[in-house]
Length: 242
Image (cartoon, rainbow, N blue to C red):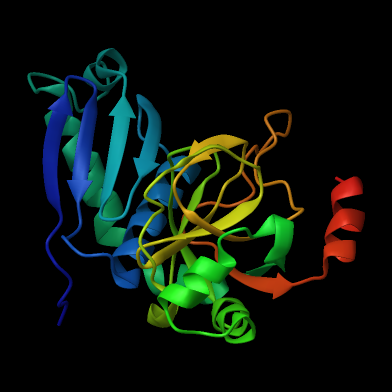
């Protein structure tokens, strides 16, 4: 018996449809969204333009002229045709296979010091020692639930609740690219220099976003990552190699 929530389809504009998979941040929902998103890109329906996955939704953009001109288009609205296409994709998905096949991406992080200026505040707020904070943060496997805010910015689920910390009261005008931060119950990585209010506990030398690459963003929804602590000397060496 299938106990997964029913997908709700909603026509947003004359050229987009949104699929709602539930109302909570959940890995089962993530894998369903990721599986349908992959299917759309591997075997797109006529008129498909792009899709945007989020925590509990998948928004599909399409060209209504091409959709309406398809063999199924006679006498029907484009959004009705698109919803029919999407129902076909959703009926065929087997998201569990994607979850099992995701490789683990290691992200080196230099914690504390000049690369993690808020680590002492996060430790104080949670009544932890610095070593325990780093261990709690680095021992988990995280799932990328969505990418947004900045190009390539991963919102990660799976952080130890002992590390949850509110955002900074006064956001910074400049957060360096690669900074690893905590905001509430989530952790994430700034892919570009940017203003930001997350509590910064470390920095990675890895480049998360390269506009000159064929695949600009290193991470995408559904990826699994783990942080690997490195020294400041290792951080400098790896940074010079980027």
